[in-house]
View 1 (cartoon, one colour):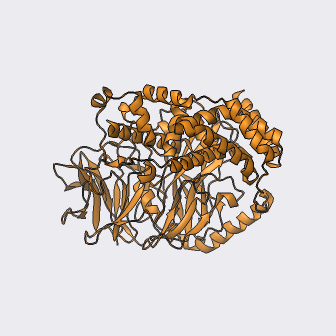
View 2 (view 1 turned 60 degrees about the vertical axis):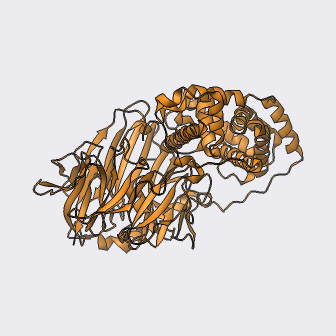
View 3 (view 1 turned 90 degrees about the vertical axis):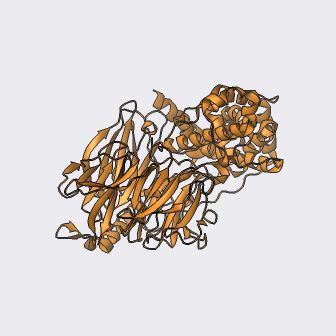
Length: 457
Length: 180
Protein backbone atom coordinates (compact mmCIF):
# COMPACT_ATOMS: atom_id res chain seq x y z
CA UNK A 1 0.00 0.00 0.00
CA UNK A 2 1.45 3.33 -1.01
CA UNK A 3 1.90 6.25 1.30
CA UNK A 4 -1.06 8.62 1.26
CA UNK A 5 -0.42 11.87 -0.62
CA UNK A 6 1.86 14.11 1.38
CA UNK A 7 -0.15 17.15 0.34
CA UNK A 8 -3.00 16.30 2.68
CA UNK A 9 -1.86 18.71 5.31
CA UNK A 10 -2.87 16.70 8.31
CA UNK A 11 -2.50 19.61 10.67
CA UNK A 12 -4.90 21.72 8.62
CA UNK A 13 -7.39 18.89 8.49
CA UNK A 14 -7.21 18.34 12.24
CA UNK A 15 -7.63 22.07 12.84
CA UNK A 16 -10.55 22.35 10.44
CA UNK A 17 -12.33 19.34 11.91
CA UNK A 18 -11.80 20.49 15.47
CA UNK A 19 -13.25 23.91 14.67
CA UNK A 20 -16.23 22.36 12.93
CA UNK A 21 -16.82 19.82 15.68
CA UNK A 22 -17.01 22.52 18.32
CA UNK A 23 -20.62 23.64 18.15
CA UNK A 24 -22.88 25.51 20.50
CA UNK A 25 -24.61 22.47 22.00
CA UNK A 26 -22.95 20.28 24.59
CA UNK A 27 -23.00 16.49 24.99
CA UNK A 28 -25.06 17.02 28.15
CA UNK A 29 -27.74 18.82 26.16
CA UNK A 30 -27.70 16.05 23.61
CA UNK A 31 -28.18 13.48 26.35
CA UNK A 32 -31.06 15.45 27.83
CA UNK A 33 -32.80 15.71 24.48
CA UNK A 34 -32.31 12.04 23.67
CA UNK A 35 -33.39 10.73 27.06
CA UNK A 36 -36.45 12.95 26.99
CA UNK A 37 -37.40 11.49 23.63
CA UNK A 38 -36.67 7.96 24.79
CA UNK A 39 -39.05 8.36 27.72
CA UNK A 40 -41.99 8.21 25.37
CA UNK A 41 -40.60 5.92 22.72
CA UNK A 42 -41.19 2.17 22.76
CA UNK A 43 -38.51 -0.15 21.50
CA UNK A 44 -38.91 -2.17 18.36
CA UNK A 45 -39.17 -5.85 19.10
CA UNK A 46 -36.03 -7.82 18.36
CA UNK A 47 -35.92 -10.51 15.72
CA UNK A 48 -33.89 -13.56 16.62
CA UNK A 49 -33.33 -17.04 15.41
CA UNK A 50 -33.37 -19.97 17.77
CA UNK A 51 -29.89 -20.38 19.17
CA UNK A 52 -27.90 -23.45 18.26
CA UNK A 53 -25.67 -24.30 21.14
CA UNK A 54 -22.05 -25.21 20.68
CA UNK A 55 -22.87 -28.73 21.83
CA UNK A 56 -25.47 -29.13 19.14
CA UNK A 57 -23.18 -27.56 16.59
CA UNK A 58 -20.32 -29.99 17.12
CA UNK A 59 -22.10 -33.11 15.83
CA UNK A 60 -23.55 -31.11 12.95
CA UNK A 61 -20.08 -29.99 11.92
CA UNK A 62 -18.71 -33.49 12.38
CA UNK A 63 -21.38 -34.92 10.13
CA UNK A 64 -20.69 -32.17 7.61
CA UNK A 65 -16.99 -32.96 7.70
CA UNK A 66 -17.67 -36.66 7.23
CA UNK A 67 -19.99 -35.93 4.35
CA UNK A 68 -17.36 -33.76 2.74
CA UNK A 69 -14.77 -36.46 3.27
CA UNK A 70 -17.03 -39.06 1.75
CA UNK A 71 -17.84 -36.85 -1.19
CA UNK A 72 -14.42 -35.64 -2.15
CA UNK A 73 -11.96 -37.71 -0.16
CA UNK A 74 -11.69 -40.75 -2.42
CA UNK A 75 -11.05 -38.53 -5.40
CA UNK A 76 -8.14 -36.81 -3.77
CA UNK A 77 -5.35 -39.30 -3.64
CA UNK A 78 -4.34 -42.15 -5.83
CA UNK A 79 -1.28 -43.96 -4.57
CA UNK A 80 -0.63 -41.03 -2.27
CA UNK A 81 -0.33 -38.59 -5.16
CA UNK A 82 -2.64 -35.85 -6.21
CA UNK A 83 -4.10 -36.30 -9.63
CA UNK A 84 -4.15 -33.34 -11.95
CA UNK A 85 -4.74 -33.46 -15.68
CA UNK A 86 -2.31 -30.65 -16.35
CA UNK A 87 1.44 -30.33 -16.58
CA UNK A 88 3.77 -27.52 -15.63
CA UNK A 89 5.05 -25.26 -18.34
CA UNK A 90 7.22 -22.16 -18.26
CA UNK A 91 6.91 -19.51 -15.59
CA UNK A 92 6.22 -15.92 -16.67
CA UNK A 93 7.72 -13.21 -14.54
CA UNK A 94 8.58 -9.55 -14.57
CA UNK A 95 12.02 -8.07 -14.34
CA UNK A 96 13.14 -4.50 -14.94
CA UNK A 97 9.88 -3.57 -16.61
CA UNK A 98 9.93 -6.42 -19.14
CA UNK A 99 8.22 -9.80 -19.26
CA UNK A 100 10.22 -13.00 -19.33
CA UNK A 101 9.50 -16.70 -19.24
CA UNK A 102 11.75 -19.13 -17.42
CA UNK A 103 12.17 -22.89 -17.45
CA UNK A 104 12.37 -24.26 -13.94
CA UNK A 105 14.03 -27.46 -15.07
CA UNK A 106 16.92 -25.82 -16.91
CA UNK A 107 16.97 -22.37 -15.35
CA UNK A 108 16.94 -20.81 -18.82
CA UNK A 109 15.02 -17.60 -19.34
CA UNK A 110 13.80 -15.76 -22.41
CA UNK A 111 12.39 -12.28 -22.91
CA UNK A 112 8.82 -12.35 -24.16
CA UNK A 113 7.86 -8.69 -24.12
CA UNK A 114 10.37 -5.88 -24.14
CA UNK A 115 9.38 -2.35 -24.96
CA UNK A 116 10.40 1.16 -23.94
CA UNK A 117 7.41 1.12 -21.59
CA UNK A 118 7.22 -0.76 -18.29
CA UNK A 119 5.45 -4.09 -18.33
CA UNK A 120 4.33 -5.69 -15.10
CA UNK A 121 2.27 -8.50 -13.52
CA UNK A 122 2.16 -11.13 -16.28
CA UNK A 123 -0.68 -13.62 -15.89
CA UNK A 124 -1.08 -16.67 -18.10
CA UNK A 125 -4.56 -17.36 -19.41
CA UNK A 126 -6.14 -20.47 -17.85
CA UNK A 127 -5.33 -22.55 -20.92
CA UNK A 128 -1.75 -21.26 -20.99
CA UNK A 129 -1.89 -19.88 -24.51
CA UNK A 130 -1.82 -16.16 -23.70
CA UNK A 131 -0.27 -13.72 -21.24
CA UNK A 132 -1.93 -10.55 -19.97
CA UNK A 133 0.04 -7.79 -18.25
CA UNK A 134 0.07 -4.12 -17.33
CA UNK A 135 1.92 -1.59 -19.47
CA UNK A 136 2.75 1.86 -18.25
CA UNK A 137 4.97 4.67 -19.56
CA UNK A 138 6.48 4.99 -16.10
CA UNK A 139 7.58 2.44 -13.55
CA UNK A 140 4.65 1.28 -11.48
CA UNK A 141 4.82 1.67 -7.77
CA UNK A 142 4.73 -1.67 -6.06
CA UNK A 143 4.72 -1.51 -2.36
CA UNK A 144 1.92 -3.90 -1.69
CA UNK A 145 1.27 -5.53 -5.00
CA UNK A 146 -2.38 -4.62 -5.08
CA UNK A 147 -2.44 -0.87 -5.50
CA UNK A 148 -4.34 0.52 -8.38
CA UNK A 149 -2.34 2.00 -11.19
CA UNK A 150 -2.39 5.43 -12.74
CA UNK A 151 -4.81 6.24 -15.57
CA UNK A 152 -1.88 6.01 -18.00
CA UNK A 153 -1.67 2.24 -17.50
CA UNK A 154 -3.00 -0.19 -20.10
CA UNK A 155 -3.56 -3.94 -20.06
CA UNK A 156 -2.07 -5.86 -22.96
CA UNK A 157 -2.43 -9.47 -24.08
CA UNK A 158 0.10 -11.44 -26.13
CA UNK A 159 0.39 -15.06 -27.17
CA UNK A 160 2.59 -17.19 -24.95
CA UNK A 161 5.56 -16.58 -27.25
CA UNK A 162 5.10 -12.81 -27.12
CA UNK A 163 3.57 -12.43 -30.58
CA UNK A 164 0.15 -11.09 -31.52
CA UNK A 165 0.17 -8.17 -29.12
CA UNK A 166 -3.15 -6.42 -28.60
CA UNK A 167 -4.26 -3.77 -26.18
CA UNK A 168 -7.32 -4.99 -24.32
CA UNK A 169 -7.71 -2.13 -21.85
CA UNK A 170 -6.43 1.11 -23.35
CA UNK A 171 -4.66 3.60 -21.12
CA UNK A 172 -7.14 6.05 -19.71
CA UNK A 173 -10.07 3.68 -19.89
CA UNK A 174 -12.49 4.31 -18.29
CA UNK A 175 -10.91 7.52 -17.09
CA UNK A 176 -10.02 5.75 -13.90
CA UNK A 177 -7.06 4.05 -12.38
CA UNK A 178 -6.79 0.33 -12.94
CA UNK A 179 -6.89 -2.08 -10.05
CA UNK A 180 -6.19 -5.77 -10.01
CA UNK A 181 -7.18 -7.86 -13.01
CA UNK A 182 -7.45 -11.50 -13.87
CA UNK A 183 -8.80 -13.91 -16.43
CA UNK A 184 -12.26 -15.38 -16.26
CA UNK A 185 -12.09 -19.15 -15.67
CA UNK A 186 -12.78 -19.85 -19.34
CA UNK A 187 -10.14 -17.38 -20.51
CA UNK A 188 -12.64 -15.48 -22.65
CA UNK A 189 -12.49 -12.24 -20.69
CA UNK A 190 -10.33 -10.13 -18.46
CA UNK A 191 -11.92 -9.00 -15.24
CA UNK A 192 -10.65 -5.57 -14.33
CA UNK A 193 -11.21 -3.79 -11.05
CA UNK A 194 -10.94 0.00 -11.12
CA UNK A 195 -10.82 2.78 -8.58
CA UNK A 196 -11.09 0.48 -5.62
CA UNK A 197 -12.37 1.91 -2.37
CA UNK A 198 -13.01 5.39 -3.66
CA UNK A 199 -16.38 6.23 -2.28
CA UNK A 200 -19.56 5.99 -4.32
CA UNK A 201 -17.75 6.04 -7.66
CA UNK A 202 -15.19 3.45 -6.69
CA UNK A 203 -14.84 -0.27 -6.97
CA UNK A 204 -16.14 -0.62 -10.50
CA UNK A 205 -15.55 -3.96 -12.19
CA UNK A 206 -15.40 -4.32 -15.98
CA UNK A 207 -15.35 -7.34 -18.21
CA UNK A 208 -13.13 -7.02 -21.30
CA UNK A 209 -13.28 -9.38 -24.24
CA UNK A 210 -9.82 -10.96 -24.27
CA UNK A 211 -9.89 -11.15 -28.05
CA UNK A 212 -10.42 -7.41 -28.19
CA UNK A 213 -13.58 -7.86 -30.25
CA UNK A 214 -16.53 -6.96 -28.06
CA UNK A 215 -17.13 -3.75 -26.18
CA UNK A 216 -16.21 -3.77 -22.48
CA UNK A 217 -19.02 -4.42 -20.11
CA UNK A 218 -19.55 -2.76 -16.76
CA UNK A 219 -20.49 -5.28 -14.09
CA UNK A 220 -20.96 -2.88 -11.16
CA UNK A 221 -23.80 -2.24 -11.20
CA UNK A 222 -25.57 -4.62 -11.50
CA UNK A 223 -23.03 -6.26 -9.22
CA UNK A 224 -22.50 -4.49 -5.91
CA UNK A 225 -19.65 -2.04 -5.74
CA UNK A 226 -16.95 -2.42 -3.20
CA UNK A 227 -17.47 0.88 -1.49
CA UNK A 228 -15.42 1.36 1.60
CA UNK A 229 -15.38 -2.27 2.55
CA UNK A 230 -13.14 -5.05 1.51
CA UNK A 231 -12.75 -5.43 -2.21
CA UNK A 232 -10.78 -7.77 -4.42
CA UNK A 233 -7.27 -6.41 -4.37
CA UNK A 234 -5.14 -9.03 -5.99
CA UNK A 235 -5.42 -10.95 -9.22
CA UNK A 236 -6.22 -14.14 -7.35
CA UNK A 237 -8.98 -12.41 -5.40
CA UNK A 238 -10.50 -10.98 -8.58
CA UNK A 239 -10.34 -14.36 -10.30
CA UNK A 240 -11.86 -16.03 -7.26
CA UNK A 241 -15.09 -14.08 -7.70
CA UNK A 242 -16.08 -15.96 -10.84
CA UNK A 243 -17.38 -19.50 -10.60
CA UNK A 244 -15.43 -22.11 -12.51
CA UNK A 245 -15.48 -23.28 -15.20
CA UNK A 246 -17.24 -20.56 -17.19
CA UNK A 247 -17.65 -17.68 -14.76
CA UNK A 248 -21.45 -17.61 -14.98
CA UNK A 249 -21.91 -16.91 -11.26
CA UNK A 250 -20.11 -14.38 -9.13
CA UNK A 251 -19.22 -14.36 -5.45
CA UNK A 252 -19.42 -11.02 -3.75
CA UNK A 253 -18.77 -9.94 -0.21
CA UNK A 254 -19.78 -6.31 0.12
CA UNK A 255 -19.11 -4.30 3.22
CA UNK A 256 -20.85 -6.20 5.98
CA UNK A 257 -21.55 -3.06 7.91
CA UNK A 258 -23.64 -1.86 4.98
CA UNK A 259 -25.06 -5.20 4.05
CA UNK A 260 -25.28 -7.84 6.73
CA UNK A 261 -25.69 -10.54 4.10
CA UNK A 262 -22.03 -10.41 3.47
CA UNK A 263 -21.40 -13.36 1.23
CA UNK A 264 -23.68 -13.58 -1.74
CA UNK A 265 -23.72 -15.31 -5.08
CA UNK A 266 -25.39 -14.05 -8.23
CA UNK A 267 -25.42 -14.17 -12.00
CA UNK A 268 -23.11 -11.67 -13.62
CA UNK A 269 -26.10 -9.56 -14.58
CA UNK A 270 -26.90 -9.24 -10.87
CA UNK A 271 -29.95 -11.50 -10.98
CA UNK A 272 -30.62 -14.69 -9.01
CA UNK A 273 -29.10 -13.21 -5.91
CA UNK A 274 -28.48 -15.86 -3.25
CA UNK A 275 -27.28 -15.18 0.27
CA UNK A 276 -24.69 -17.80 1.12
CA UNK A 277 -23.59 -16.55 4.48
CA UNK A 278 -25.56 -14.19 6.62
CA UNK A 279 -23.75 -13.39 9.86
CA UNK A 280 -27.01 -12.29 11.41
CA UNK A 281 -28.36 -15.79 10.99
CA UNK A 282 -25.53 -17.81 12.37
CA UNK A 283 -24.22 -18.19 15.86
CA UNK A 284 -20.67 -18.57 14.68
CA UNK A 285 -18.62 -15.52 15.58
CA UNK A 286 -18.52 -14.03 12.12
CA UNK A 287 -17.68 -10.52 11.29
CA UNK A 288 -16.89 -9.28 7.80
CA UNK A 289 -15.83 -11.82 5.22
CA UNK A 290 -12.36 -10.86 4.09
CA UNK A 291 -11.96 -13.27 1.22
CA UNK A 292 -13.91 -16.01 -0.51
CA UNK A 293 -12.71 -18.37 -3.19
CA UNK A 294 -14.53 -20.97 -5.26
CA UNK A 295 -12.94 -24.38 -5.39
CA UNK A 296 -11.87 -25.44 -8.90
CA UNK A 297 -14.86 -27.75 -9.10
CA UNK A 298 -17.18 -24.98 -7.87
CA UNK A 299 -18.64 -27.34 -5.27
CA UNK A 300 -17.01 -25.68 -2.28
CA UNK A 301 -16.14 -22.17 -1.15
CA UNK A 302 -13.27 -21.28 1.15
CA UNK A 303 -13.55 -18.07 3.08
CA UNK A 304 -11.72 -16.14 5.74
CA UNK A 305 -13.63 -14.15 8.24
CA UNK A 306 -13.02 -12.25 11.40
CA UNK A 307 -13.26 -14.24 14.55
CA UNK A 308 -13.18 -12.93 18.05
CA UNK A 309 -10.14 -13.95 20.04
CA UNK A 310 -10.35 -12.80 23.55
CA UNK A 311 -8.38 -11.65 25.27
CA UNK A 312 -5.93 -10.63 22.62
CA UNK A 313 -3.14 -8.20 23.06
CA UNK A 314 -4.25 -4.64 23.64
CA UNK A 315 -7.75 -4.08 22.32
CA UNK A 316 -7.25 -5.96 19.12
CA UNK A 317 -9.63 -8.82 19.28
CA UNK A 318 -9.55 -9.79 15.65
CA UNK A 319 -8.34 -12.96 14.14
CA UNK A 320 -8.97 -14.16 10.64
CA UNK A 321 -9.81 -17.85 10.37
CA UNK A 322 -10.51 -20.09 7.42
CA UNK A 323 -13.82 -21.82 6.85
CA UNK A 324 -15.09 -24.08 4.12
CA UNK A 325 -18.67 -24.55 3.06
CA UNK A 326 -20.54 -26.18 0.24
CA UNK A 327 -21.36 -23.96 -2.68
CA UNK A 328 -24.99 -23.69 -1.68
CA UNK A 329 -24.00 -22.14 1.64
CA UNK A 330 -24.55 -25.29 3.69
CA UNK A 331 -22.17 -27.56 5.57
CA UNK A 332 -20.14 -24.69 6.90
CA UNK A 333 -17.16 -25.74 8.96
CA UNK A 334 -13.99 -24.32 10.31
CA UNK A 335 -11.11 -25.63 8.23
CA UNK A 336 -8.07 -24.77 10.29
CA UNK A 337 -7.49 -25.82 13.86
CA UNK A 338 -6.03 -22.94 15.76
CA UNK A 339 -6.75 -23.01 19.48
CA UNK A 340 -9.47 -20.51 20.29
CA UNK A 341 -7.97 -19.42 23.54
CA UNK A 342 -4.53 -18.21 22.65
CA UNK A 343 -4.16 -15.21 24.92
CA UNK A 344 -2.09 -12.39 23.61
CA UNK A 345 -1.76 -13.72 20.10
CA UNK A 346 -3.58 -12.45 17.05
CA UNK A 347 -3.76 -14.92 14.20
CA UNK A 348 -4.62 -13.96 10.66
CA UNK A 349 -5.09 -16.41 7.84
CA UNK A 350 -5.37 -15.60 4.16
CA UNK A 351 -6.54 -18.16 1.65
CA UNK A 352 -4.11 -17.93 -1.22
CA UNK A 353 -5.35 -20.63 -3.57
CA UNK A 354 -7.08 -23.96 -3.96
CA UNK A 355 -5.00 -26.77 -5.38
CA UNK A 356 -5.95 -27.55 -8.99
CA UNK A 357 -7.90 -30.63 -7.94
CA UNK A 358 -9.65 -28.91 -5.06
CA UNK A 359 -8.26 -31.23 -2.41
CA UNK A 360 -6.02 -28.74 -0.64
CA UNK A 361 -5.89 -25.08 0.19
CA UNK A 362 -2.82 -22.91 0.37
CA UNK A 363 -3.00 -20.54 3.31
CA UNK A 364 -0.72 -17.90 4.71
CA UNK A 365 -0.98 -17.72 8.48
CA UNK A 366 0.59 -14.95 10.48
CA UNK A 367 0.79 -14.47 14.21
CA UNK A 368 1.24 -11.18 15.97
CA UNK A 369 2.03 -10.97 19.63
CA UNK A 370 2.22 -7.61 21.31
CA UNK A 371 5.37 -5.85 20.07
CA UNK A 372 7.12 -8.97 18.82
CA UNK A 373 7.87 -9.24 15.11
CA UNK A 374 5.15 -10.89 13.08
CA UNK A 375 5.76 -14.47 12.14
CA UNK A 376 4.12 -15.95 9.09
CA UNK A 377 4.01 -19.46 7.76
CA UNK A 378 2.62 -20.81 4.54
CA UNK A 379 0.60 -23.95 5.10
CA UNK A 380 -1.28 -26.42 2.99
CA UNK A 381 -4.44 -27.81 4.52
CA UNK A 382 -6.16 -30.95 3.33
CA UNK A 383 -9.78 -30.02 2.89
CA UNK A 384 -11.22 -33.40 3.76
CA UNK A 385 -9.29 -33.90 6.98
CA UNK A 386 -8.07 -30.45 8.03
CA UNK A 387 -4.59 -31.88 8.32
CA UNK A 388 -2.03 -29.12 8.01
CA UNK A 389 1.39 -29.20 6.40
CA UNK A 390 3.85 -26.38 6.90
CA UNK A 391 5.34 -25.31 3.59
CA UNK A 392 8.82 -23.86 3.60
CA UNK A 393 10.29 -21.99 6.50
CA UNK A 394 8.48 -19.49 8.67
CA UNK A 395 9.10 -15.87 7.85
CA UNK A 396 9.74 -13.31 10.53
CA UNK A 397 8.83 -9.78 9.53
CA UNK A 398 10.61 -6.85 11.15
CA UNK A 399 7.25 -5.45 12.15
CA UNK A 400 5.06 -5.75 15.19
CA UNK A 401 1.88 -5.12 13.28
CA UNK A 402 0.46 -6.87 10.27
CA UNK A 403 -0.70 -3.66 8.62
CA UNK A 404 2.91 -2.43 8.62
CA UNK A 405 4.10 -5.24 6.39
CA UNK A 406 4.71 -3.55 3.03
CA UNK A 407 4.01 -6.55 0.85
CA UNK A 408 1.91 -9.55 1.69
CA UNK A 409 3.32 -12.80 0.35
CA UNK A 410 1.41 -14.40 -2.48
CA UNK A 411 1.22 -18.05 -3.36
CA UNK A 412 -0.03 -20.23 -6.17
CA UNK A 413 -0.06 -23.86 -7.19
CA UNK A 414 1.74 -25.40 -10.07
CA UNK A 415 -0.69 -26.61 -12.74
CA UNK A 416 0.03 -30.24 -11.83
CA UNK A 417 -0.79 -29.56 -8.18
CA UNK A 418 2.54 -30.93 -6.97
CA UNK A 419 4.32 -27.71 -6.16
CA UNK A 420 3.63 -24.39 -4.59
CA UNK A 421 5.13 -21.13 -5.74
CA UNK A 422 5.61 -18.51 -3.03
CA UNK A 423 6.52 -14.91 -3.79
CA UNK A 424 7.58 -12.75 -0.88
CA UNK A 425 7.96 -9.38 -2.55
CA UNK A 426 9.38 -7.36 -5.44
CA UNK A 427 13.00 -8.04 -6.22
CA UNK A 428 13.03 -11.38 -4.44
CA UNK A 429 13.55 -14.80 -5.90
CA UNK A 430 10.33 -16.81 -5.92
CA UNK A 431 10.46 -20.09 -4.06
CA UNK A 432 9.11 -23.38 -5.38
CA UNK A 433 8.18 -25.96 -2.78
CA UNK A 434 7.44 -29.60 -3.48
CA UNK A 435 4.46 -30.43 -1.30
CA UNK A 436 5.29 -34.12 -1.02
CA UNK A 437 8.89 -33.81 0.00
CA UNK A 438 8.80 -30.32 1.44
CA UNK A 439 11.93 -29.49 -0.52
CA UNK A 440 12.14 -25.85 -1.44
CA UNK A 441 14.08 -24.36 -4.33
CA UNK A 442 14.78 -20.72 -4.91
CA UNK A 443 14.36 -19.76 -8.53
CA UNK A 444 17.55 -18.59 -10.21
CA UNK A 445 15.97 -15.29 -11.14
CA UNK A 446 14.37 -12.48 -9.18
CA UNK A 447 10.91 -11.20 -10.02
CA UNK A 448 9.17 -7.91 -9.36
CA UNK A 449 5.68 -9.41 -9.08
CA UNK A 450 4.11 -12.79 -8.48
CA UNK A 451 5.14 -15.10 -11.32
CA UNK A 452 2.53 -16.98 -13.30
CA UNK A 453 2.88 -20.66 -14.11
CA UNK A 454 1.87 -21.81 -17.57
CA UNK A 455 -0.47 -24.75 -17.82
CA UNK A 456 0.20 -27.31 -20.51
CA UNK A 457 -2.11 -30.19 -21.33
CA UNK B 1 -3.69 -4.78 33.57
CA UNK B 2 -4.81 -3.07 30.39
CA UNK B 3 -6.38 -6.26 29.09
CA UNK B 4 -8.20 -6.72 32.36
CA UNK B 5 -9.40 -3.12 32.34
CA UNK B 6 -10.71 -3.45 28.80
CA UNK B 7 -12.31 -6.79 29.60
CA UNK B 8 -14.05 -5.35 32.65
CA UNK B 9 -15.28 -2.32 30.71
CA UNK B 10 -16.63 -4.57 27.97
CA UNK B 11 -18.36 -6.84 30.41
CA UNK B 12 -19.95 -3.85 32.05
CA UNK B 13 -21.06 -2.47 28.71
CA UNK B 14 -22.42 -5.84 27.65
CA UNK B 15 -24.51 -5.98 30.80
CA UNK B 16 -25.81 -2.48 30.14
CA UNK B 17 -26.65 -3.36 26.55
CA UNK B 18 -28.54 -6.41 27.77
CA UNK B 19 -30.52 -4.40 30.28
CA UNK B 20 -31.23 -1.63 27.78
CA UNK B 21 -32.39 -4.22 25.26
CA UNK B 22 -35.00 -5.29 27.81
CA UNK B 23 -36.28 -1.72 28.05
CA UNK B 24 -34.21 -0.38 30.95
CA UNK B 25 -33.91 3.34 30.22
CA UNK B 26 -31.47 3.96 33.07
CA UNK B 27 -29.11 1.37 31.62
CA UNK B 28 -29.46 3.01 28.24
CA UNK B 29 -28.55 6.38 29.76
CA UNK B 30 -25.46 4.86 31.41
CA UNK B 31 -24.54 3.25 28.12
CA UNK B 32 -24.70 6.36 25.95
CA UNK B 33 -23.44 8.90 28.45
CA UNK B 34 -19.71 8.19 27.90
CA UNK B 35 -20.25 8.02 24.15
CA UNK B 36 -22.30 11.14 23.58
CA UNK B 37 -19.35 13.52 23.44
CA UNK B 38 -17.44 11.69 20.73
CA UNK B 39 -20.61 10.93 18.84
CA UNK B 40 -21.63 14.58 18.77
CA UNK B 41 -18.18 15.74 17.76
CA UNK B 42 -18.03 13.14 15.02
CA UNK B 43 -21.43 14.08 13.64
CA UNK B 44 -20.59 17.77 13.68
CA UNK B 45 -17.23 17.21 12.06
CA UNK B 46 -18.88 15.17 9.32
CA UNK B 47 -21.90 17.36 8.70
CA UNK B 48 -21.30 20.73 10.31
CA UNK B 49 -24.45 22.35 11.66
CA UNK B 50 -26.64 19.36 10.89
CA UNK B 51 -24.46 17.20 13.10
CA UNK B 52 -26.44 17.73 16.29
CA UNK B 53 -29.63 16.46 14.71
CA UNK B 54 -27.84 13.45 13.24
CA UNK B 55 -26.32 12.59 16.62
CA UNK B 56 -29.71 12.94 18.26
CA UNK B 57 -31.39 10.72 15.66
CA UNK B 58 -28.61 8.17 16.02
CA UNK B 59 -29.07 7.78 19.75
CA UNK B 60 -32.83 7.68 19.50
CA UNK B 61 -32.59 5.05 16.76
CA UNK B 62 -30.19 3.14 18.99
CA UNK B 63 -32.81 2.99 21.71
CA UNK B 64 -35.62 1.94 19.38
CA UNK B 65 -33.61 -0.70 17.52
CA UNK B 66 -31.43 -1.97 20.33
CA UNK B 67 -33.42 -5.20 20.84
CA UNK B 68 -32.44 -6.27 17.32
CA UNK B 69 -28.73 -6.16 18.16
CA UNK B 70 -27.72 -9.79 18.51
CA UNK B 71 -24.21 -9.37 19.82
CA UNK B 72 -23.79 -6.92 22.69
CA UNK B 73 -20.07 -6.78 21.94
CA UNK B 74 -20.86 -5.10 18.65
CA UNK B 75 -22.64 -2.17 20.22
CA UNK B 76 -20.01 0.43 19.37
CA UNK B 77 -19.62 -0.72 15.80
CA UNK B 78 -23.39 -0.79 15.44
CA UNK B 79 -23.69 2.72 16.89
CA UNK B 80 -21.00 3.98 14.54
CA UNK B 81 -22.76 2.45 11.59
CA UNK B 82 -26.06 3.98 12.65
CA UNK B 83 -24.38 7.35 12.88
CA UNK B 84 -22.88 7.00 9.42
CA UNK B 85 -26.30 6.10 8.02
CA UNK B 86 -27.92 9.08 9.72
CA UNK B 87 -25.23 11.36 8.36
CA UNK B 88 -25.78 9.94 4.91
CA UNK B 89 -29.51 10.58 5.21
CA UNK B 90 -28.82 14.14 6.30
CA UNK B 91 -26.58 14.68 3.35
CA UNK B 92 -29.21 13.38 0.97
CA UNK B 93 -31.71 15.82 2.43
CA UNK B 94 -29.28 18.63 1.98
CA UNK B 95 -29.10 17.93 -1.76
CA UNK B 96 -25.65 19.10 -2.46
CA UNK B 97 -25.47 21.44 -5.40
CA UNK B 98 -22.11 20.63 -6.85
CA UNK B 99 -20.80 17.26 -7.78
CA UNK B 100 -17.70 16.60 -9.77
CA UNK B 101 -15.94 13.45 -10.78
CA UNK B 102 -13.01 13.42 -8.41
CA UNK B 103 -11.55 10.34 -9.94
CA UNK B 104 -10.73 12.16 -13.15
CA UNK B 105 -8.41 14.55 -11.38
CA UNK B 106 -4.73 13.80 -11.10
CA UNK B 107 -3.03 14.40 -7.80
CA UNK B 108 -0.27 16.96 -8.15
CA UNK B 109 2.98 16.68 -6.29
CA UNK B 110 3.19 17.94 -2.72
CA UNK B 111 5.38 20.93 -3.56
CA UNK B 112 2.90 22.58 -5.89
CA UNK B 113 -0.11 21.91 -3.68
CA UNK B 114 1.29 23.15 -0.43
CA UNK B 115 1.29 26.86 -1.00
CA UNK B 116 -2.34 27.30 -1.91
CA UNK B 117 -4.11 25.11 0.59
CA UNK B 118 -5.61 26.60 3.69
CA UNK B 119 -8.08 25.45 6.29
CA UNK B 120 -11.09 26.61 4.29
CA UNK B 121 -10.08 24.66 1.21
CA UNK B 122 -9.37 21.57 3.31
CA UNK B 123 -12.85 21.83 4.76
CA UNK B 124 -14.38 22.43 1.33
CA UNK B 125 -12.55 19.38 0.04
CA UNK B 126 -13.71 17.38 3.04
CA UNK B 127 -17.31 18.33 2.15
CA UNK B 128 -16.89 16.59 -1.17
CA UNK B 129 -16.12 13.23 0.38
CA UNK B 130 -18.47 10.35 1.02
CA UNK B 131 -19.77 9.96 4.54
CA UNK B 132 -17.71 6.82 5.05
CA UNK B 133 -14.55 8.64 4.03
CA UNK B 134 -15.41 11.56 6.30
CA UNK B 135 -16.14 9.25 9.19
CA UNK B 136 -12.82 7.46 9.14
CA UNK B 137 -10.92 10.72 8.69
CA UNK B 138 -12.71 12.16 11.71
CA UNK B 139 -11.93 9.12 13.81
CA UNK B 140 -8.28 9.32 12.91
CA UNK B 141 -7.60 13.03 12.60
CA UNK B 142 -10.04 14.54 15.06
CA UNK B 143 -10.23 11.87 17.73
CA UNK B 144 -6.64 10.76 17.18
CA UNK B 145 -7.62 7.12 17.12
CA UNK B 146 -4.88 4.81 15.87
CA UNK B 147 -5.79 2.20 13.29
CA UNK B 148 -6.14 -0.51 15.91
CA UNK B 149 -8.71 1.56 17.80
CA UNK B 150 -10.59 2.41 14.62
CA UNK B 151 -10.69 -1.28 13.79
CA UNK B 152 -12.14 -2.01 17.21
CA UNK B 153 -14.74 0.75 16.96
CA UNK B 154 -15.86 -0.28 13.50
CA UNK B 155 -15.38 -4.02 14.09
CA UNK B 156 -13.26 -4.43 11.03
CA UNK B 157 -9.79 -5.92 10.63
CA UNK B 158 -6.92 -3.50 11.01
CA UNK B 159 -5.94 -4.06 7.41
CA UNK B 160 -9.37 -2.97 6.26
CA UNK B 161 -9.22 0.08 8.51
CA UNK B 162 -5.90 0.99 7.02
CA UNK B 163 -7.18 0.49 3.50
CA UNK B 164 -10.23 2.67 4.18
CA UNK B 165 -8.19 5.40 5.78
CA UNK B 166 -5.76 5.35 2.93
CA UNK B 167 -8.57 5.60 0.38
CA UNK B 168 -10.20 8.43 2.30
CA UNK B 169 -6.96 10.36 2.46
CA UNK B 170 -6.42 9.91 -1.20
CA UNK B 171 -9.98 11.02 -1.95
CA UNK B 172 -9.31 14.10 0.12
CA UNK B 173 -6.16 14.73 -1.86
CA UNK B 174 -8.15 14.61 -5.05
CA UNK B 175 -10.83 16.84 -3.62
CA UNK B 176 -8.17 19.34 -2.60
CA UNK B 177 -6.96 19.42 -6.16
CA UNK B 178 -10.51 20.07 -7.28
CA UNK B 179 -10.81 22.94 -4.86
CA UNK B 180 -7.70 24.67 -6.14
